[in-house]
Amino acid sequence: MRKRLSSKIIISLGVVLVIAITVFYTLQSNSTFSFTSDFDQTLSPTEPEEIPAAPEKSLDSSSEPQDKELSPTSTLLLVHISDSQALVLYEQGLKLYYQRQFADALDLFNQALQIDDHCYEALNAKGAALAFQGHHNQGLALIKQALDLNPSFVYAHFNQGLAYELAGRWDESIASYQNALQLDNRDTWSYYGIASIYGRQGNVDKVLEYLKLAIALDADVKEVARNEHDFLPVRNDPRFQTLVKP
Image 1 (tube, one colour):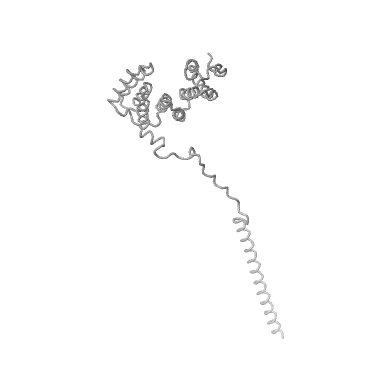
Image 2: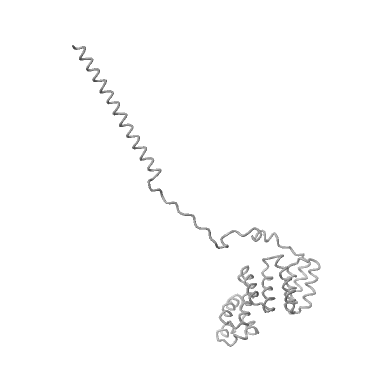
């Protein structure tokens, strides 16, 4: 009797132990699942954070890299380096050109080009001198050669505007002066050149706009403007008189 009771007790204890072990592993499994789920939710939220959109690519060419041929570095590499002796003759000719001694200036420019036929400084000045003598197309062709050799040569863009102006091609003249100003926004005489064309057209508002910019850079422009034939159509306007008064 005692032996059977002991067997029952042992069996009962064994059942309890099995139940206890089962419960223990069940609870441990649930706990692990809960922890894993919480951890996964931390790394992968149900509502992921919104990623800011990349800014749209600007269509403005100024924000984009220049083409290789037009980049400042490659432009510098392509610019012709003029012969030093040719440049001396060019400088001498330029002084005569400013004194409107065009024939003598042309002689020196030609000498410079005999030494270096790619001297773009002399090509540009010779073109301007020819334009002043009425040879507009020939002068413009030489100035274009100068710009082909050095597209960033501000003085050639200015002289191109001047040659177009002398030829009466005013829209092209303004465009060339504007090209000079894109390269150098402190080019006094390109502002003046644009003002003078609008003066011929009697557009006093545009005259004032560009002449003010020229005067702001060089007060001596006032005196030149007072005697400028191109401003005859607007000379009697009180605003023009106030602008150029000493």
